[in-house]
Length: 535
Ligand code: C2E
Ligand code: MG
Ligand code: MG
Image (cartoon, rainbow, N blue to C red; front, side, top):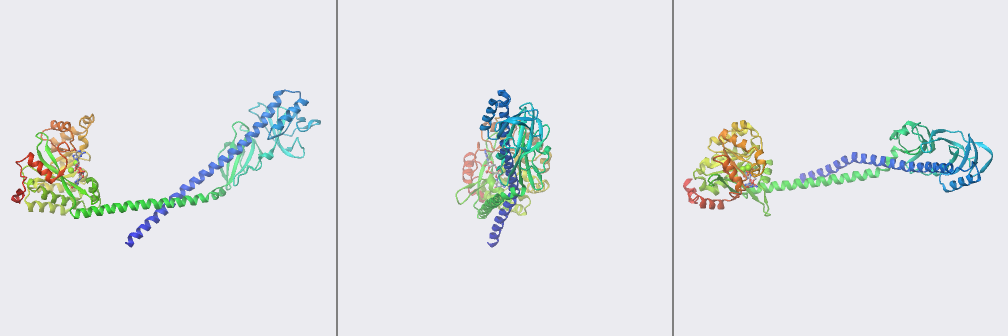
């Protein structure tokens, strides 16, 4: 009991630890992805602000040039004032000629023209088609004492309000903006620190890690501006450490849940196994008989014994399900012996009828079990049942170990029992293989029977199987016959064919089967007294 409890606790703990272990790399990847996505989104926001400023600047310059008013006339100054008034980034506009500034929106006509700032960056504008000179850190036109960013293009100078770029940090994310021309790679900071990135690296727009910092440059498609989002790598991860623990907790929870479900399933399986074993030992498994008929005369030649188990709850479990469990838990031999006893008990008198044969399904484990052989020998010896009345069905799969199978088959045949290969066609049997096993009959799997009446039958291997049986002189029993058409198809296919299936009769308890035999074959020895006479 305590061992079971310790095992349960261990499994749950193991599940929790496994859940955490699995969630760590998963969470890390998620965090890194989310962080990267956040940095990109932030940089895009900054780039949109820079683009807005560039667009506003270009629109203002275009508006001045488009109107074509006389140079520095009152009308032109008034136009420029209107434009500045309505702009958010452009603080002043002016007109220049040959490097000299003659008037601005803020100061009107200048008494003495002044030099336009010497350009820090010059490039050809894609929108205007003209040269654009940008100077940073120069005296502002509006207030010569202050410093700012002056853009001069086609005789129109504008001043950008750099203050609007301040306060765009979203800790731990920081940003820098720059004028950067794709073709020339020039760059000029508008605001913020771009760190140690080269112009080429900015224009490449790839994420970079340097000195513990992550940089994400993004450049505008339309304007000569780029934004670089930066963050201290450690800050980014630290900020998300809560997420990390949350995921680890969820991983532990999920791991425990999976372990609990696993334990529950295991426990149910164990309970199922214990119930089955108890049912076998208490002889609660029953046996039903399905008639095997001669396809030519429709006479019943024998039966297949099939195991049935109805649990105390009233649910019946499919035979292949509990047989598989019994095979896995290595007690299928007990079922085989129980079935043999049931067959002898229930069909006794019939077994002495000439030409009547009942088949019992056996498993590969029986072939290695001395108890099985002893049981077979004892059963026939004590009851006097002719060994030919008791045959055994072995699936193709259970004969995979050919040496063991061949030895066991030889021993059973030597005692007078016939051996059938069950579910034939679903496994590995080749002609040579069958030849070496020396069996008496094959039972064609019902998967092939199903193909009769469909186009698949011509493509199926049924004709080859029959030819192979002819060559080896084997009896053929067709399984799963459900229709008259299927029965007729196989009747015509070969002489001496036998069949089994719902068309001829479902598996039924012994009494019902005996009653049918009495009705259809009164000549056979099916009376109760017959068994005594034979033993
Ligand atoms: P199997 O030996 O091939 O038995 C034939 C199966 O096909 C039986 O299923 C039977 O009820 C079913 N059957 C018969 N005629 C028809 C038909 O016309 N149509 C359809 N759809 N099915 C048909 P069951 O009784 O559920 O047994 C399933 C399998 O479990 C058996 O296949 C056999 O491999 C195994 N089995 C049953 N009883 C025992 C047993 O006592 N010992 C061993 N080792 N295996 C057994
Ligand atoms: Mg069978
Ligand atoms: Mg079968």
